[in-house]
Image (cartoon, rainbow, N blue to C red; front, top):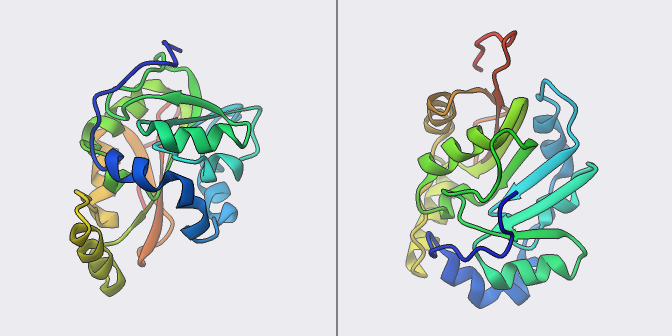
Length: 206
């Protein structure tokens, strides 16, 4: 891993999260650990090292059973909350991950991809740092649903630059990043897992 005290150029909605970091967990809905586990189970290798990218206070990391859990976020104040929960933290930009290539077994991006300034670059970076057979699990909200449209309007109304993706769009993006995608569902909240190919991995989408 590169310098854990790197100072990224702020991207996406970092400023908003710096402002309400102290209250984030209080207003957040309960985290569904079972859905996350289903995505991680798609990996073609044992999962020992997991990075919660754009992980904020580490809500997803806390729900993961792994030897090493790292929260990576560009918001200094969100990471301060994660450290209070004894989580390992790295400050960094999701589109320029301060991690070595093929150095982690799984990456989670939960409720956060729409806040990242350049989602395509972030997914390419995830593919770079994943070990072969490793998995990316993305939990997102579908802007094509009624609740999704309301969410988009609400976040834009408070000045966020959120860019949401449908399950179909995100599936294509994972495939473009050379990750084999699997969609859990296509409702308002959905999860896509993308596995980094090994020499014996067949191309499969769902």
